[in-house]
Amino acid sequence: MPKEEIMVHKMKVAAVQMRAELGNVKSNLSTAEALVREAFRKGAKWVILPEFFPSAVAFAPNMLTAWRRSKVNHSSSCKSLRVNTKA
Image 1 (tube, rainbow, N blue to C red):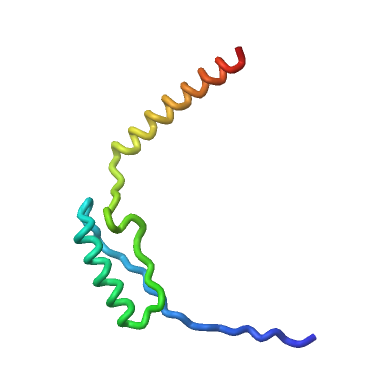
Image 2 (cartoon, rainbow, N blue to C red):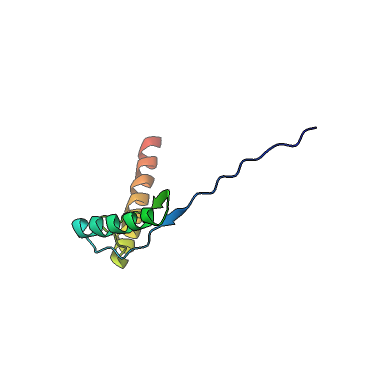
């Protein structure tokens, strides 16, 4: 049985880490553009940016509290829906 040939291609990939400003899309895009250009100048073929980098979506503890409240309210609504549909 002949041996398979495996072609290996090397590619430089850059992963950008940046400190985005919450809600400052213009500044965040400018910062990202500068970092992406630098990565390409250094030979990267692909450049990966952080999720939500344009707006810097942030997690705040009150978001978790709101989610927990909505989950509780949603669960009780679903129970009443189930009860009503059986009747």
